[in-house]
Structure formats: structure tokens, C-alpha cells
Length: 100
Image (cartoon, rainbow, N blue to C red; front, side, top):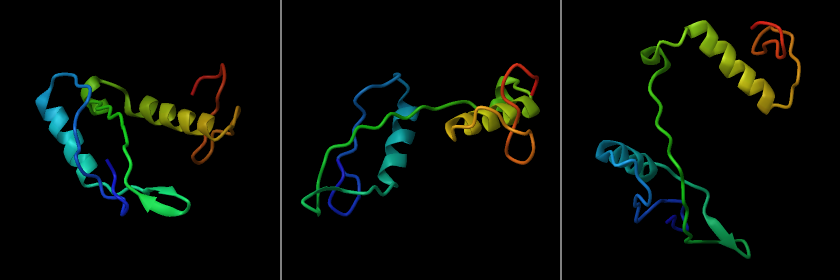
């Protein structure tokens, strides 16, 4: 739930992996967050909110090459921005059959 000030309350886990530490970390993260409250006719109101938290291990602990990881993240960013091809300079990478 989120109150009319955007503050979360009554934070509960509704689906779990079964890992208590991850549940606690997700709940604590939500409790420290501030959201834009829902509104009716322009007036803020309390509302329910469901969020999905996905925890991932640090890429380095998984043996992922740092350069590959950086290129992958830049590719995803470019795709999200609607660019189908990029120059490979700055924050952009070449997308397509070429190697990154």
C-alpha cells in the first residue's frame, strides 16, 4: 500500500523464492522508497501497489567478462532508446551481426 504522501505501508511479500533474507531485503527497500501517490480527481489517495523485485548476483561473481557485460548493457540501452544501429562511439555500440 502507498499512502497519499507516497509513503509505503503494510509492506508484505505475496510471492517468494523461499529465501527469507531476500524477502527482508526487498521489503526494506520498498519501505525506504517514496512513490508518486495515486489520485482521484487530482487528489492524492491511498492505493495498493504490487512490485516485483529481481535479485541478481554481481556479474563478476558469475565469470562474465567486464567488456562483454558493458557492451551488452549499452546494447540494451540503445534498443530501449529505439536505435536499431549505432556508431560504436560514446554510449553507443554497433548492433547487428557485427561483433561488439
